[in-house]
Length: 312
Image (cartoon, rainbow, N blue to C red; front, side, top):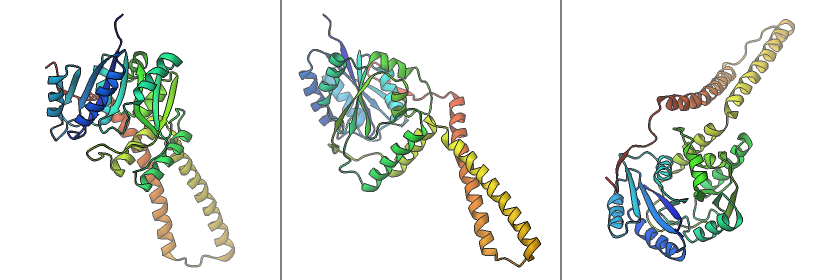
């Protein structure tokens, strides 16, 4: 009986130091799971270092190693999508090269699909040791906020590291949107998913590419991709201020008729003008975010552009 194929997709951006460690570890797991065939698909997301050369060297000594190299940096979301499109496996997993996604969990994940009937097995961190406290605080706040705003459930601490059947992957690939937020897309397509918890693991080499600002922008992408509540909120705020201003006008008219019109201080007026102006700009900014996403979608630009693969 022919063995089924498991595709390991690894998104890489300036990971020349981490890749050799990752390869050594994933090979150990592949030997333990000898009831499956493996392919290791590295997606080079426009790295500036020698990441591509390291991957090519691995391909020379192990033909199971495949690669897709972008023409420039398109971002991790594009890299994951490219990996899913190029993967040939019956089962597909997404992993990071820094070994923060423990390869040994693959055995348990595969057993959950085969023996327990799940379509997908995801992983989530139960601790955030090693992260700056401020980042951990805002991450928890983000998951609480988006789960209240969105109909699609986002699991706190969820990683992109998951094992999926071909059916699940095909469903994800059918979502062709340009502005991608994979954690939400994984939940959107549904299917039975089991969650495996583990404690946070430090990077084996190199430095994280996710600054606080990049994570903040990524969080905004997630909110705008899976919720229209901010648009409704801006409308509610506008309506509320109209009601308050109407009541204030009536009070001023009544007060003027009864007590006259004593001269008021201009500082308070300036503060009110700035406050209302800030609210207006805030609501305009929310609408601008949705408009910009719509604008990018209508361009129908490719999610990524391939410069080379192991075949050409």
